[in-house]
Image 1 (cartoon, helix red, strand yellow):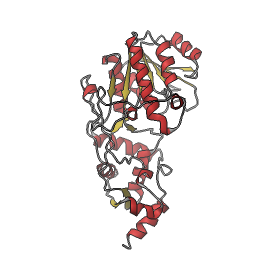
Image 2 (cartoon, helix red, strand yellow; image 1 turned 90 degrees about the vertical axis):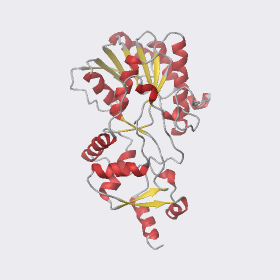
Image 3 (cartoon, helix red, strand yellow; image 1 turned 60 degrees about the vertical axis):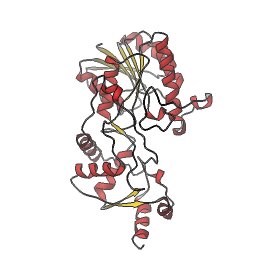
Length: 329
């Protein structure tokens, strides 16, 4: 394969995917509405086709213009998006759908592609666009991929957990980077041992390419950090990247209620462990970036671009009010 169409390709995962494909000598075309700044606008190695991926005619136009060997679908958020894409691109060498670890419907530890059940998805959920139905919609897209493979489409799925790294516009990790960089003490929900596996964005991009090149149609592949870390260990990595240290105020739900907060208000907190088995993608040659290196690149990028994530979690005022109360106990 040497020609790739990236549906999306400008913001986060898609942006890194384009760079990964270029580094591996692909001819790359991005297909999107042009609503966001295009980091490849001045790069003559990257062609751009403008169009709305929800418009079947636009997809057909992109197919005719590019005739791609591989299609990477980074912005399929509703099942009908996957249905249309697997029909339009049914003859390509590889169609890779970016699903999510949120598609799993059971709290297995770890979650395995061929064992752990997926979320169900009602007709109402399938056309929704709220965060509450995200996992259900991604699971429905997975099932469409499997059905497409049964009729001969070379369709596969990749499931990452929370993705972090440079250009992460969600700023969930940036919230913690900012806290560690700016304050001597941070509020930590619980005891810091909650485990929510993450995936470094460059690794996700590499995993997508490997699945396209080496994967089996009809299969799903978990892609994530090979070494999952607790919230506490993540803060250690952030502090090391900033060449500093940080004191933590571990808090129970009752203590958080003093400031009208709860653990789920904090980004990257999850009460029950979320861990994906990545052995299947490792068999394709996947390796993840060492955590220290991934975190250093992420922290440097967030600081350089002024990402603070302050809107992603409790305000510092609320935290300080809680710390003041705890300091008198």
